[in-house]
Length: 64
Image (cartoon, rainbow, N blue to C red; front, top):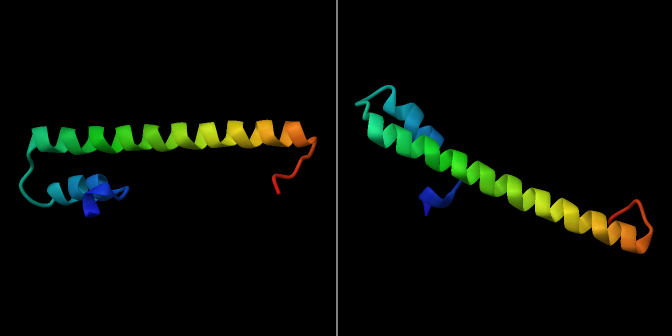
């Protein structure tokens, strides 16, 4: 369950700097964190576009 939460990979990569450093595992953790960040960005972008269309349709500056 903890592997699904954001920053788990970043924390694991930071902990790796204090212990045994494995370059392949480190790169995998960082790439996973970047991919997760891009996914969150795309979801937020789509949500804002949907809210913008709804506001234009209602001729309102407020969402609710």
